[in-house]
Length: 116
Image (cartoon, rainbow, N blue to C red):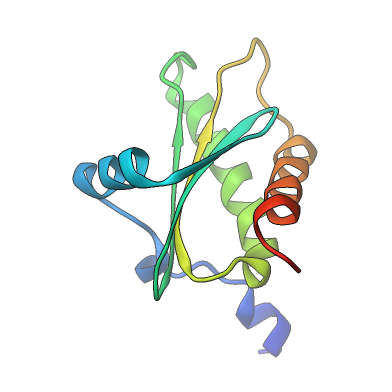
């Protein structure tokens, strides 16, 4: 397998799980508001990530689709993120956020908080 493809995988150990973990990051972390997503983050020794979507998207199919798009956008830019805990929250709109809008917000986050 090529090295470039291997770096871009999102492993299970890199995903934040559990209500208390999410609450700690939401309460203590810094916040970046983009157009379609909000990023909460705390600096740490390891790199972990979590994804959640507004419950105002009534159907689970819609929420899961948005989470897949956020995971894909993060996975492709993962190497530019510094070590830390990151939570990505999709805000509610009348339409589902497009991949390019999510990608744009992540690029803005990296430009603002991380020097590439």
